[in-house]
Image 1 (cartoon, helix red, strand yellow):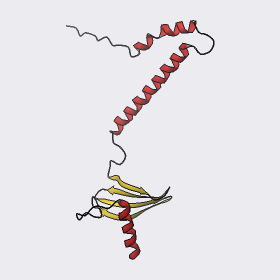
Image 2: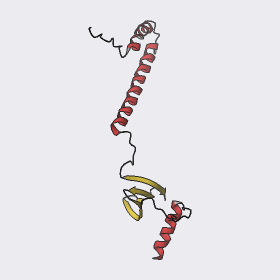
Image 3: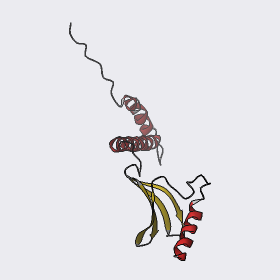
Length: 142
């Protein structure tokens, strides 16, 4: 028994149906922009949007769907101290680093075991800003 050959559907079959309309619109065109011009621009725009969506899908498949910070380095928290100054809590393997970031400089301010934060002894955990203020006061006392 011979293998039946599948009848592949043409990819742009819908576009071929528009050619008679394009020809008719070109014949009846008034001065200025014709319907065919609008139709051609619309089809071009749809093609470009489709290519962009396909490229985004392919990029996501190549990257494995991973977002930023999925490796051994993750940003846990952060606070802005000014327009260009930040303090960030970063998780690196088994520890947390409190990092100060200013233009042209990055410094490690403190190290903590991963997952531990001030107040882990059963008390309510203070917000990061309060913890930072307590750390500053403690450093000034020393």
